[in-house]
Length: 418
Image 1: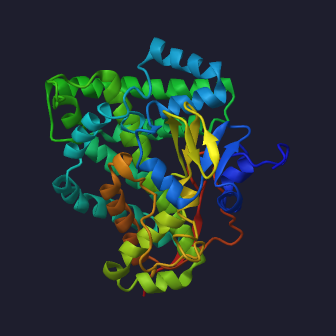
Image 2: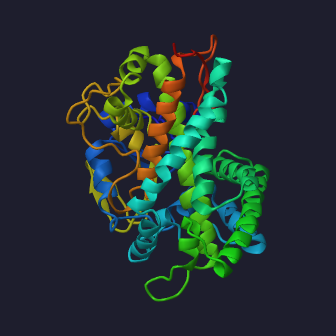
Image 3: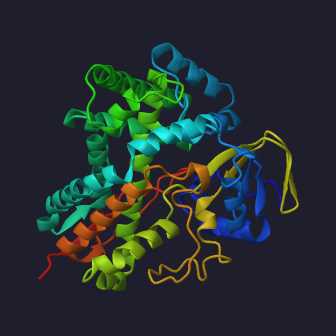
């Protein structure tokens, strides 16, 4: 492949619509050294699974900062210095940026905080929040899904999980938006500094909550993380707690469920027969609908790792210390695992497990709650509306991102049932 025509994940056109590039790479270059990003791109299902199930060879340790160092050079360190001077280090022990044994210890605490009994307790809260949001626009005959449903629903649930007051909602929204724009790695240095300072303001706000919970514990997830000792008897540091909040709860919570709600609404518009199938009997069809939306429009398109040894994969030598990216969005459309993979089919039989929530030790801790958010968002939307369709002239557009699959907006119209 000629360097001047070789595809790169840094191309914003590819970021907005990556699927033709994924197909090319899966078929012809399944292990591909991106010439501009300097990252080995892994696109076939079996290879992505191998990367995810071998954390010893493919390390998660500080993978976000490693990605920044590779793409941004000295600027990445300048931004880390700003956190150290004005706030707390970012990605300091995030659940997604550590290896065992530290990861095992963090995962133990999160699994306890997100235990199945607590998720069951939240189900009525998720249901009521979804219906409240849909009812707020159902009489209008139109809405913008991202702003009126997809973003506020997971933020409402996050506030319930951590015990944050209503005043925290815009702080979380701004913090998540700043974190996401930094992950795009398309900002100028001035713009990135502004995003960093937005995150630092959120750090200081939630540091006050952490201090209060140390003195007055509650029954929230955040209180559990603050007050339950680690295996060695020590408590989690303020910096690591803030990383858990900003990345493992806020970012992960909003950027998975929210994007899938928007994608699912668009798919309902594009496939009216799916509406007619699911609406009369959501208990029968909703689970398969949700899983197929997750597969075909994975909210996280890829995740980065660094090799701890020399690896040869598909005849390509990957040296120790190299960055690789396992592209979930490509693997989830691999025809070797999903026949006719670009067809949206909620009746798929014996499909392989998708990668929307990862696999292996780093699978998403909040997957069960996210699935309940998706279930109730789509259930409420289909229950309170009929004949959902795109607004005339609407052309959905995507945010450019090397990681997320995120619609900017989805303007829809609909009829009232009956």
